[in-house]
Image (cartoon, rainbow, N blue to C red; front, side, top):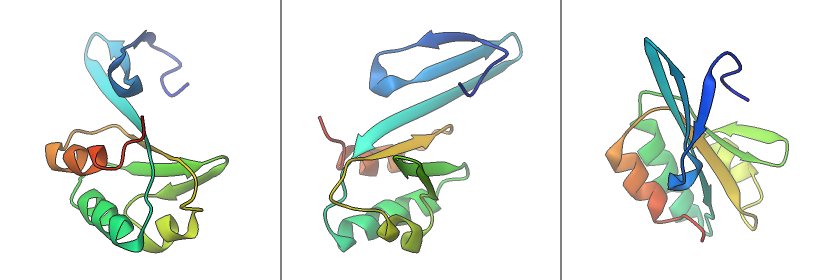
Length: 102
């Protein structure tokens, strides 16, 4: 778990995990997405590049920086990918929601 020293509170909204300490709050969000075409990858990476926090895309044991178009294209786009990030950017989340799988 990412916050081994803190109390965990799981929320239903897109598997959000909150790690609380009296002076520190960090939200980690996870989404399951599917990118079917190169144009969708370009749209996703372009939105990720505008964020000032780290965004990871992973499938199985492979973790890729979401701001790397070559990295994202190297993943098998036939599979559902997991996106995880700890910041907040409304524009990025709006782009991300276009690719969320149910």
